[in-house]
Length: 520
Image (cartoon, rainbow, N blue to C red; front, side):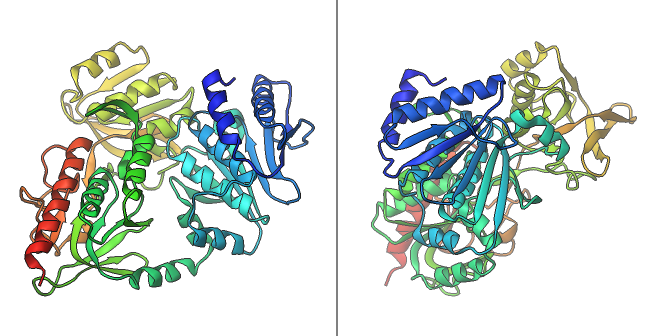
């Protein structure tokens, strides 16, 4: 199951195991059970002095296996094979169960250990989902740290009956004690905050007590990461407040032709950005969403940024790098059926629609790429394009035209998402050429119609373009003194990762220049 190179890497990781634990598998006669037996046997053989394997488990979900440190009551179960994007989650679970300390802030560890009550988590994931590992790893760690927390990680395609019965149409999907708890990307701190209602207040007080920064960067994507590195290299007090480091790159599967890197994947690139930032003395404040910007009252005064938890951060200069988000269709039914058939990530959620009919809204590069990927999974894909022709590159259009289970409808204006109250059943649209209203029966709708800048919170604080982008000059300066901006949230004409990174460096150097010129 694992090639020699992967076995060698796994063996090196397992050398870090210090405490004995056992794996208990519940198997049946199926092929997936045979693969699980082979995988677990390999793991056991690589570290037989610390890891034991039993195959007499009696769990109803088969195949599945638990990891349990000897002498503890921890409960972590994997149902289905944790391979693909989840192989890293498995490796980390093995190490943490075996006593290797997690790279997590100590205060978060203490919060998990202090949680009272009984929590039974079930998290559904797919092996192609690049947003799932953070959720899986957070819930796995919680189960290892606190014996009152149970976590079961479920690979959706191996338990399709459950997925159908629970009408799961997007991953990651988390249930707590049998009730829907959360959907979509979440990190450990955010999960804790939902369980520990006093956490946000304590975090706000801790952040507000920080000394003023020389430069505070709001946003942690390529622009924000580059700005942090370039600012920190100048030896000035640098902080980054971001909803998640890496930004939207975390949700991008393939990244091609970032100069010197012909190909990589978004989560890997995002992880590299975070490692680079943390190589320097940067105060990283993750899972923080800014809600208010208050420019300095006087030249050289402090700028304030208020976060949604009530914290107020102060800084001599600020760099805005809040990026952009997926554009919504803004039609009736979209919000109602979000994660119930309306999706935005074909790589994450595509496997849930195997054998079904789906639509892709948007005929640009993102839309056509999504349709090509989905065509290999689903029964049929219909691409809806508002304009009279597709906007994607010619090579993508040629590939799309070669697929037998793809249909393209041009001049199509989406008017409503149709559903039965619990899930999507179809799509209503208007033929712009004839004015005729039509409907198509569908199980899923993947929206790929571009991006919107994350700047709503900045209205009245800095000048915005008619598209909501932050207006900047060649140095990244905004209309507010000491406030700079970079990346997809600005008026820069091309929204590319390499351009955002360069703009972040420019903004950091401009902020440093501003500090020199305004310091007493």
